[in-house]
Amino acid sequence: MGYKKAQVSIEFIMIIGALLFFASIFILAIQENMKDRIYQRENVLVKEIALIVQNEINLALQSGDGYSREFELPQTAGNLNYGINIDYGIVYIKTTNNRHALAIPVADVVGDTNITTNTIEKINGIVYLNA
Image (cartoon, rainbow, N blue to C red):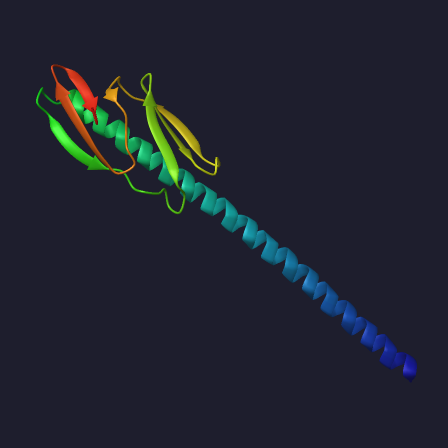
């Protein structure tokens, strides 16, 4: 009789252990999926900021002389701080944690971007950005 109770107890502990194991695997899989989604969302936000700059420059190029406009860039890309600059016809954007970086081509401009309010102008066929 004592052996039956011991066997039931051991089987119960094994079932609980298996349930905990599978629950842990399930939670880890969900957590990994959430990490990927957060990474992709942050990547999209960084790309959107770079595209804002590219679109503003393209709009200024297509406009006539005397075009002037102010546009703002977000302070952060989601919860991430970032740096952005323009060199040799390419917009570079990189988060300060170095997880995300992007470079997209733009037309040559005089000046550089700010992470706040930016002024873009076209004078005599040349686009000036914060200059």
